[in-house]
Image 1: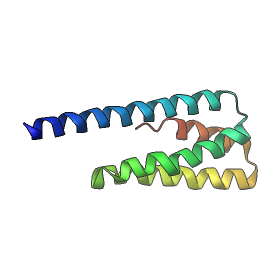
Image 2 (image 1 turned 45 degrees about the horizontal axis):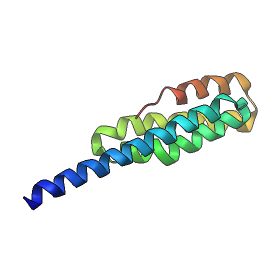
Image 3 (image 1 turned 30 degrees about the vertical axis):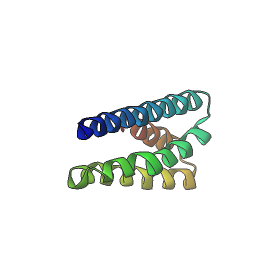
Length: 101
């Protein structure tokens, strides 16, 4: 009987973690809606590095291709920011926005 309660508690905890995660994602989307590209692009880059890449890393080998794509986009974003290339910043920002968990 104890195993049942342990499983039930684990499921409830997982649900709470998921709810907090999605609430955080919603707040991030709302904040991004009011940012300029100069603010939104670095914020999205940070989010990809801190949230998305670790989540895909947990998938093991299955997430490695997505991580490689994210790293490539992040490199291009860094170069676009350094060069002040507005068209590339817009393009790479749109690409970064397409990544999902």
